[in-house]
Structures are given as structure tokens and as C-alpha cells.
Amino acid sequence: MSTHEQGGEDMLGGGRDGATTGAVESSDEMRAASLDLPPEELHSLARAFYDLTLDYISSPSALPVFPDTSAARLAEIFNLPLPAEGCELESLERDCREVIRHSRQNGHPRMFGYIASPSAPAGALASLLAAALNVNVTSWRSAPAATAVERTTVRWLAELIGFAGAGVNETCGGLLTSGGSMANLDALFVAHRAHSREATHGVAQDASRGGTRDTSRGVAHDPSREGLWNAGAPATVYASDQIHLSIPKAADILGIGREHVRVVPSDERFRMDMRALRERIEADKAAGLRPFCVAASAGTVSTGAVDPLREVARVARERNLWFHVDGAYGALAASVEGKRALFDGLTEADSVSLDPHKWLYAPLDCGCLLFREPESARAAFAETEEGYIKVFERQEDEAFAFWDYGVELSRPFRALKVWAMLRYYGARRIAASIAEDCALADYLAGLVSAAEDFELLAPVALGICCFRYVTARARRELEEARDEEERERAGERLDELNARVMQRVQRGGVAYVSNATLRGRFALRASITNFRTTRRDLRVTLDEVRRAAREVEKE
Image (cartoon, rainbow, N blue to C red; front, top):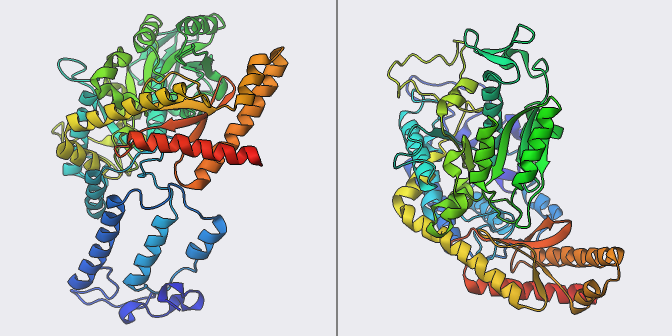
């Protein structure tokens, strides 16, 4: 029985080298229970993890995209008693290989599900150093170098997508987050607080308290102290029917309420309908509600569609609304010359979210939130009560604290991996890889359109292609349907077929596609955010869909 399998009553017994887990005595210069390792043992441990990492990065196609495993099998391997004593390195290394073998392989060139990218080697290896440093990036005082690196990285990201630079939004700033969901939550919070400070609907700014004053009642309202319940009419945010689920979730968390996220229809290209947006805002204003934010998409997760940002910006400015762009998936494609026109108007946004851990190929986790005017975020988040986190520095950069710009206090050194990638690869090389992903999505759409047994379900805007498998019989049923009811039944049978095909493809391990629901129809969805994917991988994937479909049809 290996040492890592021991537990129970042994927990209070001796540890490695005779150390106990109870009270221990230390000399003036040595601890009895230190976790430091002798140089030789440290090198062996480091070499083991280095080899595991290098072997994995060097052979991305060695394992199936999805493992042939089960929850019961994983419980047998990993659901062990709490170890009372440390295990031998060989045992730990063996179990780590099991972790790799039983994982979904996001680095595989035929991993097209959701929005999952491989870790670029420079980013993955830089993450090791960030973990070893283990700095808490709360402020310059706590992490001077990490703070400087993150602020530089945020500026680089803003310049990469054209949100800043060359005389545009020169005062912009922001911070790195755990991902797009946290970035969108922060953005909506700042948007609501900014709206609460502005003189709209009889509410004037009360600078003396940092809150608002309802001039119709003569009562000051400070949402940071009193909450939203005394703020008068409900506030409303506007987003298309293609928006990411994190927007209504953020509204729920913030107390705005999901029903006050006004869902605007999308057009035939799955972009926000501008006429419908204007009508919805005007209807809510007439009903006495308080519109405060429009959240546009710069790359929806279902199809990759980009809302008409310039037009959304115009509507937001005309009506004094905060303009947020959710670019968690697609904003980084603005770095591609051939795609920049899609993002016209991005520079007008008050805030933009983007995820380096999606289309910059950075390791999880790493999102980013940019503000055109960072002081709006500071006005919402800055902690005014002195105490545990009081800042004593007086020089502006040295007094900087990330807690003044977002929810998190404890924060990992997310920036090092992105900073290292941008320095090592350069912006041009990364943008070229994103461009190739987009070109591959166009290539896949061409294959689908040219095939009799596939149907393209949405135009390709960035790197996502949505399609479905269609049998000759199903195509005939759809064409010959006598009424809408017959057409609907035929569509439902086709939806069920494609859902079963997708599940079989996923279990097969050759390729991995996910799904989207488009205008009520089930779509197979391939998202290409992978610097290893080739045209051959796309042809293999379509052949795998065909194979799975033939098997399903025989059942």
C-alpha cells in the first residue's frame, strides 16, 4: 500500500522524516516541519513536472479529444482518503499522468467545442513562474513588479484591439479578471453607479456625499449604502437575444433583476436589431423605467456575430446610456486587419470585456476589462473607509490599487503569462494566428455549403461555423411539408438526429463539436480558436460527423 493511500487514525502520527503533525519544537534557525526540500529532491520534483508539461505540450494529438472514462472510474483513481503522509515522487507522477489521460484535451487540433483554446507554450511555462512567485496583486505596495506588468499588459491589450493608441482613448485603463463573466459583472456595476450619479429622471449629482439626490423628493440616495431598493423606478439594461448568459446573471447578482435585462431581437445575421433597440428604450422610458446601459456583443458565443457597434454607440450617446461591449470571445479578432471593419465603433465604448484565455491562447484564467475613463470604475469601487487596506504611498503610481477598479481583493499574477506571450511571440504573430483561425472557419463553411448532407445555419463572421447534418429524407420532408405543423415536426426530428450525432462524435474522441440553438433549431457548432488546427482537421471532423450519423441512423 503506497503512503498516499494511508489515512484515518494515522493522521496524528509521524510525517516524513519523523516530523509530527501535532506540536513541534523549532530551533532558532530551523523549523521541524518545513515544506522546503533538499536541493536534489527539489530538482527531481521540478524535473518530473517539467517533463510532464513538456511531453504534453509536445504531443497535443497523442490522446483522444475526450477521454474514454466515467465518473465511477475517476472515483476509483482519485477519491482516496486524506493522506496522512507524503507519497513517493513516482506515485505522484503516475497519478498526474492519470489526470492528463482522463482530461478533455483542449490543446487537441480537433477540439472545436465551446470556446476552448490551447495554452501557448510561452504562456504555460510563464505560469509556472507566476505560481512560484505567488504574489497577491492587490496594489503596487503588495506587488510592485506584478502591478507594473499588469498595467502594461492591459495597455497592450487595449492597443491590440484598437481600443486605445495613436491618440485614441489615451487615458483608458482596466484590469485583468478571472474571465468574461467577472468582467461583465464589474462593467454593469460601474455602469449602474455612473448612471446613479448623473442628473437624469429628476436625480441630480450630490457631490458632497458621492451619492445622488432625487430632486422631486428632496432625498439623497446613495446606492453604495442604501442599496437599490430605494432608488426609485427600476433600471434597465439592453442586450440582443444572442447575448452571453453572464449579462442577465450579472443583473441578477447586482439586484437589477433578470426581467430588467431587455432582450432585443437580432437580425438575419444574428446582430442586434437597431430599430427594435430604439423602440424598446423609448417604451421603457415612457413607462417610467430608467434605461442605463446597452450591452453589445463583439462576437456572440453561438455564431460569432458582431453587433453594429457604431450604431449602438450612437443610440447610447443620444440617450445618455452606458455603452458596454462584451468582447470576451471576439474582441481580440479586432487585431486582424481583415476583420477590423466589423469592430467599427469599438472605441466609443465606455467599457469592453475580452478574454486572453480564449483567443490570445493564454492559459486559464485570464479575462480583461477595459474602461475608456478608468475614473468611472474608481468612483464605483474605491474603498473610502480607512483600515486594513489603507494606502500610505503618495506618489500616484505607487498608490495604485487594483481593488479600486474591480470586485476582487486577492488576485493572482494573471498578467505574467500574457505579458510573456506578447513579448515572446509579438502582436503580429498572434494576430496572424487569429486570422488563420477565421480563414479556417470560412473554409469549413465552404465545405459544408458544398456538401449535400450538410446545411450551413448561420453566416460565418469570425471563427465559429454552425451547421447541421441533413439526410436526403429529412431534406425531402422539409421541402414537401404541406403546412407549418409538418415542417415543425420534420425540424424536430432533424434536431433530435443532430443532438444524437453530436453526442456520438464527442464520445468517439476523434473530434469534438458542441451545439447552439439558432431560431429554435439545433446546430452543430465548431469554434476554431486553436493555433494547431489545419484544413485536414476540418475534413476529418466532417467525416467523423458523417460516420456518427450513419451509426445513429442504424439504431
